[in-house]
Image (tube, rainbow, N blue to C red):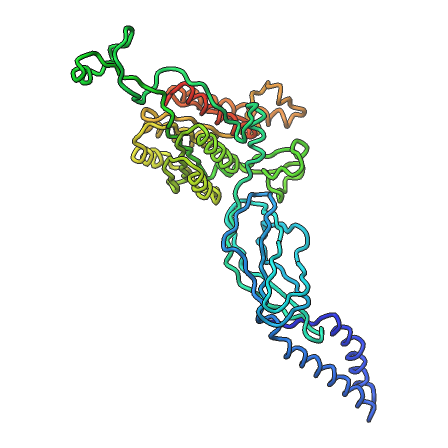
Length: 467
């Protein structure tokens, strides 16, 4: 516990101590005695007040839940319980040492009056997390006035609270719903499926027109009459989202401030982009992963998650249910870009060993670098015959055809800039053509369309029963 001078003590020092010191310096003889008495009296009262009040906060404790969950950009109300096991406290101030990525909603320091002995009171400390990830609240601080109110008695309380901040999907869900004209939260809906399934349903008597391939000859021999196998459409399929968080995933995405509504927490509030708000491609990948997980659960499929950079680091086997969705969310919310090149060969070998059943692999990988695209193309034959692979990335900012109506240059420097973007667009198109020969589709949507296009691809695959 640490005493700090309060306002009355500062006034006493100004009105009494300073003149007393002046008298000691300039007065002669017995004129110094009153000044000395004043100094001793003020000092004695201050020391006695500090000594007798040093235990005022010894019976006060703070309690905060060990684990808090929140969403980026959404208000988080931290419940703070103050328990007083000592003498009555007329006045208390409290505050929590917050990480730099937290914004305090309202006053940073809270006030509380009248906490009786043996009582507790729960207050709410509102904050707003500005960045996803895992954070820790390490300490809180409380203070109260001394008995004579000359001192503020301060106390530090150590905390071990973990705060998990998840990505905010509200903006993506609204965009998805508006694009698909859906009533749900994810932009997903029931798709009518036609065709012949692969899952065995039952045996029935042979009927004219049945395909001879569907006749079950063993059952025919047992029944002494022709029996036909019937099949149902596969309802449960395995969907894996594979996220690359290597160096290229840190590519910045700039969005004009005037294009985004106020309060769109998809972008960092601390962006220093001037007229732009800035996010990263990895943020888009993570949002797309969670949206696709929610849609797959509604469709009755099994959803899995894999992340990799220079090696595979997180692998979650495909399952479904709300508990599994929470596991996936806990696995990806702390992902950050790594300054390494992706190792596609090691990834493909791991996928071939781990995934024995045919599955849909949605790979969120940046192939804007020609060398990275070449390595990906060389490693792809290890899995593309066993699994159905879809590749998606965010279109680079200037990767458009030179004579595109959306990119009209206004100066000579912009002509060269658009020319470089045209070459980049041409390289991506050639990469897409090469991947198409291996049966892999490359999607290059704009950043706001990444989730919608990925979900549309998934629903189209499910409708056509390609897996």
